[in-house]
Image 1 (cartoon, rainbow, N blue to C red):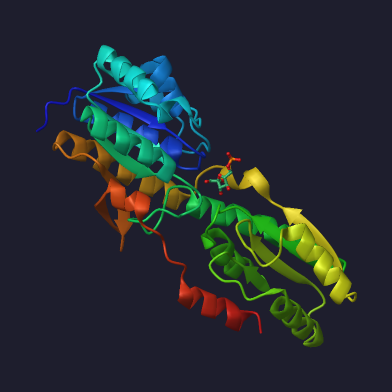
Image 2 (cartoon, helix red, strand yellow):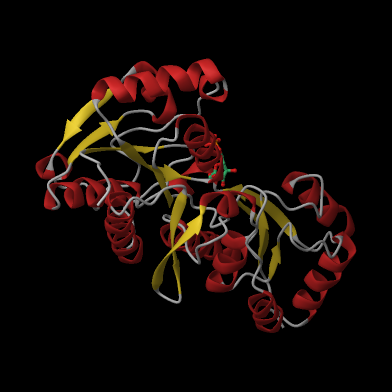
Length: 327
Ligand code: F6P
């Protein structure tokens, strides 16, 4: 057992549903193993300001079902400076914190890795982002919930699209990967899915929409990942289709930040609970610089520099499924 008596936990970067369930699991695992736990507010910014609060099993009552993060999150420029990281380190030592669990994405892990290199401070990462773009885990916390949120939104858009025989372009999040667009697109029965991992061109899109119309489809949904490069942006795509395919009445819907909210799905709650236990146990076993992930439903530990540098591959088999489904 490593000589760790007090563990810090915080959330960093874009929030995601399931972060609260992960916080709850880290805090309760510490309580169960008789290790003190401290909540660090607003990520690295709170670490630099010493914004800490001791947490016990009761501190995390009734949060497993809540979206967002009770510890708040922030993007912190000061932590990119050695002075900022020194302030953070001094605060952690003053508080008696021996290690921390960072719940966030690759940007948050990069900061934790540099912090460990400079101060040899034990860190373990839990992948919390709706983008599902972190190497070393099949699923990141929040991805499953975001998919369900997007599918529900598209089902609603489909109601009005079919009532008015309209074509809708729907933009979804995912930064520069297309996992949300592809999976939610198949789940919602989108006619076309545009993702950054593929660029089949606007002409092909137009041909496909014409074929759909000729085959009797009176309305269509095209999912566009925000990182997609088929057009300059979703509004330019709309104009292009209006100019070249006047048959269609075209509208745009940008789903935006509602994809980051909502009560986490059961899958995300269970995954978060499992990952929190694994993270605390890894620290107590003297491990560091690792990210907890899930693969074939087993929890695994990946060196955090690989999680940061690695890339998640788009599911080619699912792309084929989506092509077949949109006949
Ligand atoms: O990384 C999660 C994410 O929601 C991305 O999908 C999106 O591009 C980005 O965060 C938005 O960042 P912000 O919340 O800072 O606008």
